[in-house]
Amino acid sequence: MSIQVSGLYKHFGQFTALNNVSIEFPSGGLVALLGPSGCGKTSLLRVIAGLQRPDAGTITIHKRDVSGLDIRQRQVGFVFQHYALFRHMTIFENVAFGLRAKPKATRPDETTIRQKVNRLLELVQLEWLADRYPAQLSGGQRQRVALARALAIEPQVLLLDEPFGALDAKVRKELRRWLRQLHDELHITSLFVTHDQEEALEVADHIVVMNKGQIEQIGTPEEIYHAPKTEFVYQFVGSSNRIYAADRGYTFTRNENALNKLYCRPHDFNVHTEPQEHGMPVNVVRKLPLGNIIRLETYSHAPQQLVEVELASHDPIINLIQPADEVWLVPKKVSQFA
Ligand SMILES: Nc1ncnc2c1ncn2[C@@H]1O[C@H](COP(=O)(O)OP(=O)(O)OP(=O)(O)O)[C@@H](O)[C@H]1O
Image 1 (cartoon, rainbow, N blue to C red):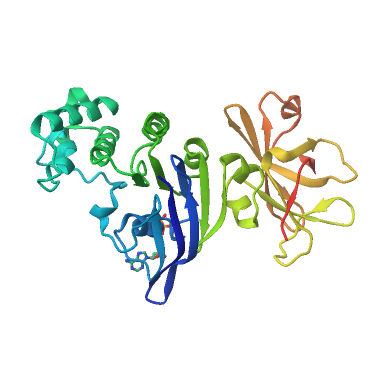
Image 2 (image 1 turned 90 degrees about the vertical axis):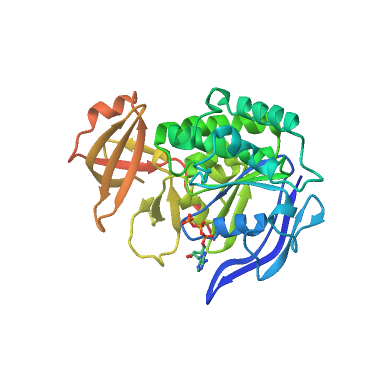
């Protein structure tokens, strides 16, 4: 079921949260809405869900204009950051809730509800917890129940708002992998909001990068990372250093308006311990071992500006570099934006 939004505007007083957003989300995809805090990700998701009315624009779910419909009629499954499970109901009853709440004419009978809920609990691997209450579950387990509950109504689309935001790093990682697998099994068109670039790159098959209520770029994780179309996308997804082309090689400057502004990723420098004709001299301040990479925090001379450099931890040059040393950086690859 593809989702198409066209000419969406959403204002809060003077503030424009969505500024003429038009986009089509592919059928069966798992798409991440990525962007900094306040860029409008949640607003877009809520407008698609029918939880919020746009000031202008249309929303079509599988060729059906749902703009005037309320959330129930849109058949969307919604999962929030804070698992809003019913505390007084067992896990089984939480998942069954959406089915029991259906109008009588479309409500399944009790046997069908039981079968369906058991199947969903199996899918999220929690059937053994069916009789417990939410308070007796871990955060990750509760979030899986929230997902099973959203899936119970057989949604046309699944919308997830920072679904793993409240969980610790390890559980988040597990659940990401698990969401990807679940999606590969069910193929429900799914959108999830995240401000975590790693999460978007790891889980999504397409990423929509948003900034100030508008869409900056849509693409596969590879396209977003390796072929960013704007300066904003380059800086937001992945680490970057800003450098400037000088007459001879490159240099650093604080001048925001300098011409020939370029960007270089930390792993895209060659590091030399001897002066290089087109190299930039910097001083090493720190050498941080980060597993399979070593990060060098270095500072350019004048003006002083932090430049991050990453080398493979097995690179032999590592042993020749100590804090306070002067080294010369030669960019291997730079990016420039109009
Ligand atoms: N009900 C509201 N009343 C007033 N302003 C709002 C309301 N909801 C959202 N906003 C504003 O609209 C902007 C976009 O909010 P939104 O929640 O869509 O951002 P977001 O990208 O999801 O951010 P975050 O990652 O912090 O959740 C923000 O600046 C926010 O302050």
